[in-house]
Image 1 (spheres, rainbow, N blue to C red):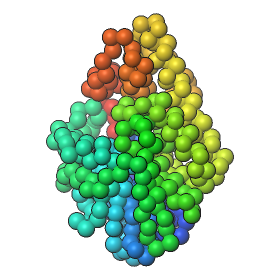
Image 2: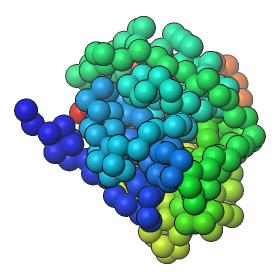
Image 3: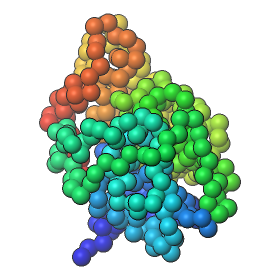
Image 4: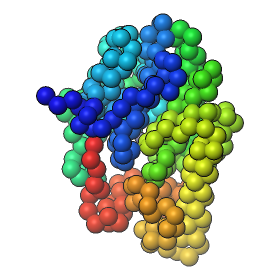
Length: 313
Ligand SMILES: [Zn+2]
């Protein structure tokens, strides 16, 4: 039997003693990063993965790195399937922590009830059931395991989604950013807010992290790499807001405006997200006569790529 971790080319990286990041290349649709913080009181995870096989590979790697230490808690950074659908594979005794909106979202209906038709091939969701958080966190909370302090924060406003949580390890100065940060992959604010996503980046900068684990993409190490990534993301979000302004002023729909995406961002993975982000920006800027609808936004994304969006989860 092949090793799923090898098949997926994912790997667990020890960022500091007991602090691990599960990095899954290439970080495109549904291929997320996760984390594991191991101390004498057990393991705290940051997120699970989309599919049963990807989550099993993650959990096997964590068990090997931590000598099978018990997983006491998982922090879901937000509701999306790539960060939560693997929750059901954790032991029953693991406490699942998330924002109230993550709990509400996983109470359903989810893609497990109604598989989406936006991606091709269809998402392999066999063997999964939704497992919502049983502890909700709206402001913040702090977990402790051995010498590790694990702070969980909500920005206080919608950004990637309405229920983002990020995890900050003050002693190690490591930030697990969830999907408030992407590196080399187009950020997405369809379910949140572009201006909120910009504010969240400013907030994350104030922590002065030395290492950032993005929700998707490689680990960022050092102030220069972090600043570079955050500046690029902020530039993209500002560009989308400016395109939306222009589209609203000239009466052009989101799909038309997507063609004006700056070439700087065309090389990022999942660049079709431009049209999804424009739909959110039109809603955010109260475009006259525009009603936000997720399925309509995805229909535009499929028009942009000429069919269902390729996905290799
Ligand atoms: Zn994600």
